[in-house]
Length: 201
Image 1 (cartoon, rainbow, N blue to C red):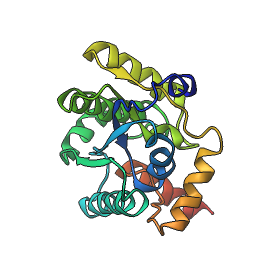
Image 2 (cartoon, rainbow, N blue to C red; image 1 turned 30 degrees about the vertical axis):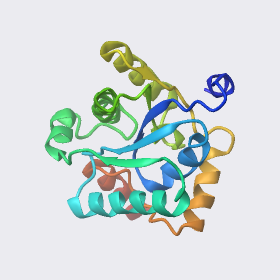
Image 3 (cartoon, rainbow, N blue to C red; image 1 turned 45 degrees about the vertical axis):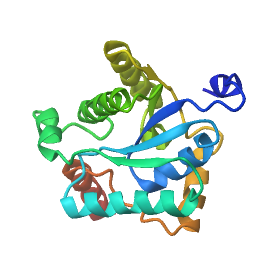
């Protein structure tokens, strides 16, 4: 990705559809990429329950864009809230460990929708903030992104945003903008796992 950014023509900003999972993870990624791309920040996360949690995270991302990048060309696009699609994707994998097959199905669901949104918005490529998390395997996410990109005919910007202290920078920005930092990924299964871990402490 760094080589790609270095080779961009001066004054030319390709159009990027950036799938965002939440405001804290998006903070550093938006800071890093906004000088290079015309960004449509796409919020599509049907895995998040309950809906009140989903709405809270949506508003935090919108606030972050307004406050951190008031003069930028970043625009916010909210996808449909479709928890039934997540539950269908997770069927039979309810007891899979965090980071396992259920999570891969969830990544695939969200990146599929991001690729479709990129095509609909006439973007040059799409990417995701998911790779900034220390708990998520960037190689697995990028493999899914590349496969979907090839199937749909739109470029995928592979990343590992946790590198170059990206995750640490995201925590700094979260404190600076007083962002809501959730204590579980978003789905009921990750929330159950976090509850079990807390009970065992």
